[in-house]
Length: 144
Image 1 (tube, rainbow, N blue to C red):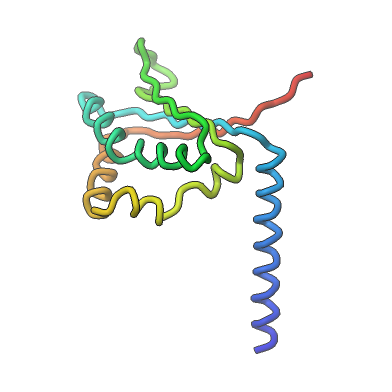
Image 2 (image 1 turned 45 degrees about the vertical axis):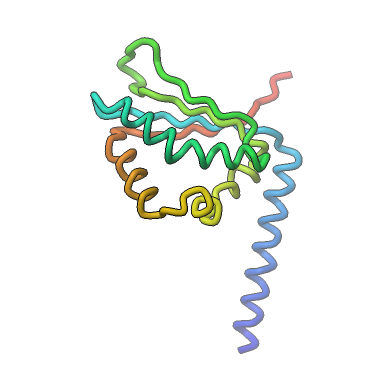
């Protein structure tokens, strides 16, 4: 029993150090930019934008209202390019790394979407018509 208690204390202590390290990075790290790219099944772009607007954007707006996100921008291409092939780019500027890592909680989702079955169904549809998706996280690199 003492052994389990010691291990539990050690895990909690290490978790505390990890959280403290994230907080330190947050204070010193400054804003972080993430970019998400979406390639949509041909002919479903308008449906994807509608689903995004109703089921993903409200989550991001809530995080922005909480001060975790500084800006949200959804971009579409004005020209067709073969590579990299994407239809929409989502740019998010997070307050810091801590906000980016801890921002999305189940409580927030359930508060925004009390009809959980509707949310899950429509988010599943958004991903069903998404052919490809990838994320890029960017950090400023000092050059001076």
